[in-house]
Length: 345
Image (cartoon, rainbow, N blue to C red; front, side, top):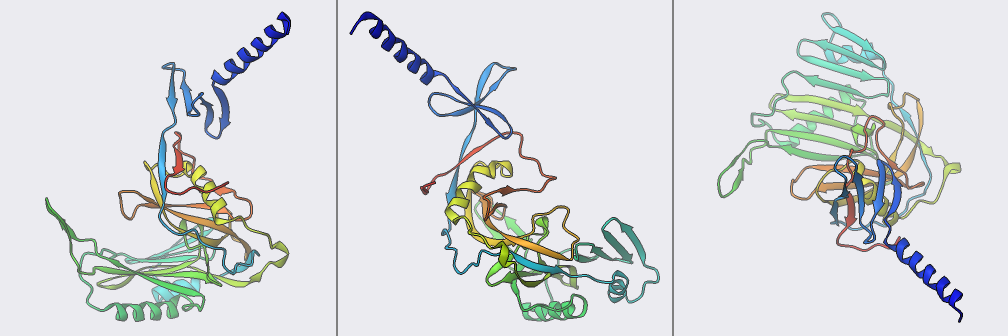
């Protein structure tokens, strides 16, 4: 081997060594990131001329990864409810005399004494009583409250549908904290009756933030004080839209990778994974006929604060992460990683 060949090989090795030591720049949503030679991500802070490494937080999977069960893969066709607002207001208020009615785009609002009724163009409506505090024990049983709610829905809310599933939550806000223990007052101060809408075991998204279907009534010592309803009639499946859906494991990886956009916990746990039908449209659609597509939904709970959680949604056809257009990703980035399971991509 002559001197020129040896020199050429030495130059190649030096180039490879320098390339391996040089930090790589990557482009991600939220700005430019760099990866150092150890594989750690960081941003370069020009003001302080220093590297700012992306914090890493653990995600723990604390539920089973579901099977797809008997899911058809076809979108769902639904029809929204429509009401005559004047007739509805007369039902709730008895008469429209002394009723103040306001209108803004897509919404009617009626007020009479301490009662307020909202009706929206998406087919949903809400009824609120002025006395809606939960600070006195209930004078009736859970069974009596449920009959009261069912009677109310039959009279004012088009009845309880066959494709509804009821969840009952107790409202017991009072309690005392000592130096050694947290003593909860077992008295029930209220009940919340929440009806989910399901089609063949799959929930038609019940998150009101995302325009979901649900019926909900809250009961205190005076009776029903808050009532919400948004319910769409299921017409059938859109067979020509049938597609294969991504696996829950694939959706899980996408959910963890994108969760920093909406979750700022220093780590979280995933406590439930299910598939839901959802209409991805804002503002909530006023169309009478709508087509819902499936999304994998992940319930992400705070590690140390019970009751604090956030949902992450992944389109089951496209693996797209969704968030409301009025929401903006957090200005800083946390890199979340699954800590207790390994899933092959």
